[in-house]
Length: 314
Image 1 (cartoon, rainbow, N blue to C red):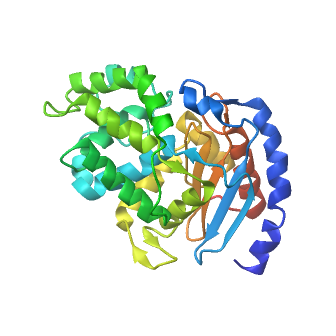
Image 2: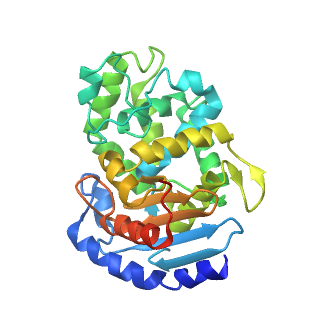
Image 3: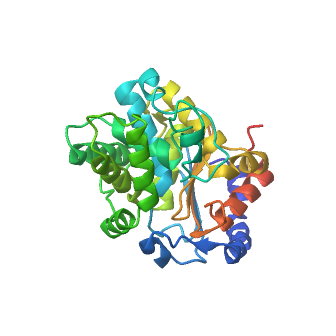
């Protein structure tokens, strides 16, 4: 990183501790029982530049599951497997303004496909498009993709979270069977098998550095700047980043775009993957969430960084 960047990075620990206070205004997700065990006051961040230099602060070594952050990367894999046209016959391109697990617009708006790939209904549909002869093969392909993007061949599924998520996923099952009834999931598709793939990719265990490394590939339009290896077609990364701006922070995405102004995707384990195009990949964790499902302290920290360093794209 440049000396100017390092100079402001010296302030990162103090900024993080100020943002940590915001955790008191959030709550750890409890509707998936295993997630309720996370430390509510934790906050960590990892920032990677194109040369692979990392600056980390706080609880950056804390492990947590990707949850909805994984949806960005299953979307990329589905696009690589099927192409743009086939994917967008099954999911739309618009934000919903509703909660991430809502089925309201599936009923009210024709043709009854999910509004976008980053809400639960959309991500379940995307999971059905991943190539593989069996659910196990699909999951293995997803894991291989995540491992390559994160630079860690040891990335694994947190079995306890997966089981907890599967056992309590009544709303997601309702969404999936509604999609089946609407023929978004085809006749040949087994709903429970699709859900199993979905629960498993949401349960991949990561740290802030993993997220930062994955975000770095997106920041450099699909090429890993550290290895100079192209991993994802530029066009598909463009699509994913656009969804991150418009839908990535659930129904607080507009507010986040105004205050922070960079592509980001959150998950209910408290993670946020974010990027500054052409510059940085960022991973954040702060398990205490606001009423929209986003990390209270994590959002505050990203806002501080963006405002202090002029990161907004707008």
